[in-house]
Image (cartoon, rainbow, N blue to C red):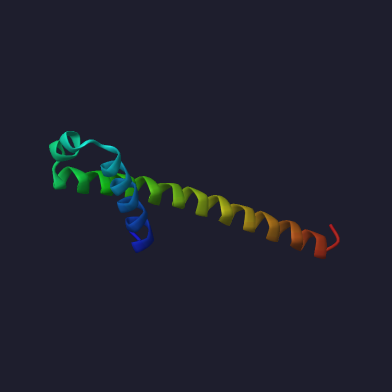
Length: 73
């Protein structure tokens, strides 16, 4: 996982922690916060993969259409 994804995931966890009252925040262990960070990181990574695949597909489609235009088809 990239450093950027892990940083964003940590930002989400930190925001979540800040939204909790002290009792709730202290009821969740550091290990559970780490698990949450990993779950968020995986979700972000999966979404990034989906977006990357879509962009690659569009690039290939544009290239194909461009090549057809250059061939006069």
